[in-house]
Length: 274
Ligand code: FAD
Ligand code: A2P
Image (cartoon, rainbow, N blue to C red):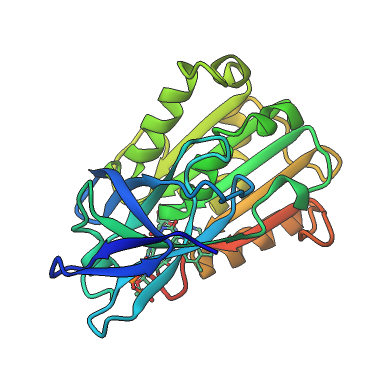
């Protein structure tokens, strides 16, 4: 049985719902992006990289839920989420206004394919994300198992603008001073952020930087090989499709929880983008 706690909806009416969690902090990164942390149900166990359903009460009084990657690692006392703000989005038009002390609904049934168990052992893992697709990797980059399993971890994150990279940039920076995994990360985590529509030291789509070999040259790495390299992919449907073709070109094959192989994919959202 899940504990019953009060949830406040946007009109601040107190109602009782199962699976309510309290918001502990909120940070707005751009006018399209924010992150927030909530209390973690004592019973919730998940694997870093998985997603859950979260939401608020809708106008009709029923839960309005959406899939969200848990951006915090499995060992964290709280849960972190990194979210888009869709102007007319049923959930995020409201969710973007949440404040510390308010409550959200969280269904404690984590699932997902971006987990270590879905990949065969390898030497180097590539985290390939666009936009909010970095959320599962925000979890996996803070997961000690990531550094126990691989000699090198390459985080490629691409957004249209520099401001949209900031959540990931600050997260990577904070890892180096992290008492738990700071030492594990040192020398293993390679961060390769790029923009496509604003000037930045490194630019271009992830697909183009892999196909041209630019990312390998810039980071001083050998090209991807199925014998050594593993990849996890999270972005729009079009991005995922195009990256899969590139990975297949390098000889990697798609895996799953039930059949681990060289790469795994998850949608960062459903739809064509905004
Ligand atoms: P919706 O009606 O759900 O979406 C409206 C439109 O907005 C969509 O058709 C799409 O075009 C666009 N859109 C939705 N989400 C995004 C996005 N993240 N980036 C760019 N465009 C988008 N969203 C997050 O912000 N963070 C996450 O960690 C996250 N994890 C997800 C994991 C999975 C497995 C899936 C399937 C989706 C995930 N999403 C995530 C998307 C999320 O479920 C919602 O779609 C999003 O919160 C918007 O909800 P909404 O009700 O406001 O609008
Ligand atoms: P671009 O600016 O060239 O379209 P979006 O905000 O549309 O979801 O895109 C997020 C980032 O992902 C952008 O930098 C965008 O590049 C890039 N992107 C979008 N579609 C693809 C794709 N099919 N392959 C590679 N990168 C993509």
